[in-house]
Length: 120
Image (cartoon, rainbow, N blue to C red; front, top):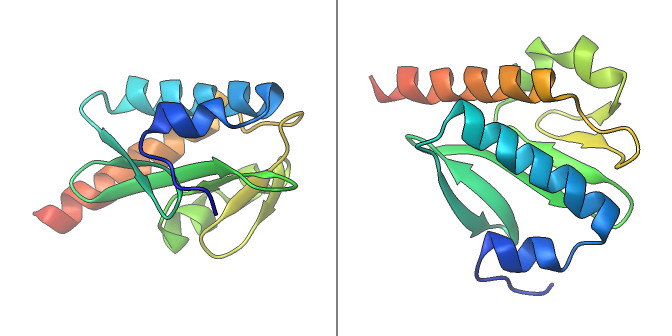
């Protein structure tokens, strides 16, 4: 697995179609939680906000969003299923059928609230 030092370096290595979708996820998370930090973790881009917020990345045959919370995936399962497949903590989807911004915003708000509640 290639090692990346920055999110920009990671995104530059992703094909254009997939990169555009990942950049949209990045912009959306930043719009909901502008104070979130960014890092590379587990070889992919990640956001932090009072702990790990979520991870996202391009895999060989799909894109993934990792909310880091089984309850979030369960809460939004019906909305997620129409865009791809979900496992306990992973949402898989295709670049030509990306997750809608409204769903990403809901997931980010829920994760941020979980992290804040855990911190309190």
